[in-house]
Image 1 (spheres, one colour):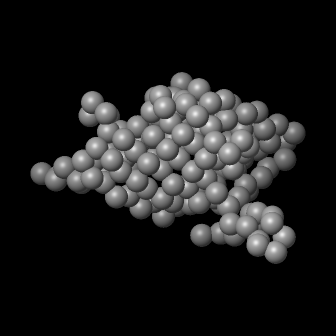
Image 2 (cartoon, helix red, strand yellow):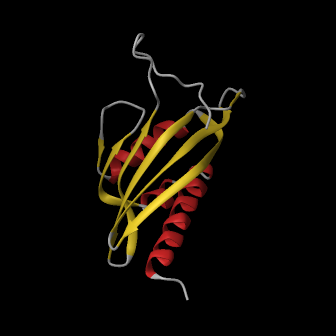
Image 3 (cartoon, rainbow, N blue to C red):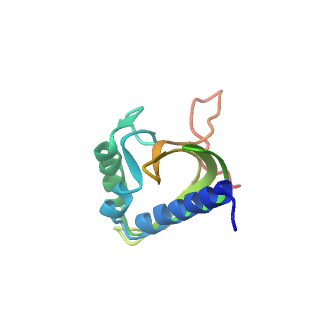
Length: 146
């Protein structure tokens, strides 16, 4: 029988799988269910923060407008779980076929997720996607791979 830690970690990994599935399907309703209503998101797109689940969904909706078909890949997911709080970090890549027919491999970003367990359900309370930057130029470095 799995320990509570193992059960929570398995639930969080399934949660991450649902994010991947929701992005691939461009399913905002499915994605909305994975975030806390008061989520704070620090994404690669402006502004500096997206506050609340509707702002997060607007961010995803805008990202989806570029793609005819979209894919999302997660690598090297690490999780730490403690009762009602958990965090994870991974590398993520959004890629696919653009509306103009061109394909893009996208870029790898560093992803951090903070989860809160409420009434037995894990929800994303905070997420952050970032790219390294070159200090001398002030520009993001988007050609790195894990």
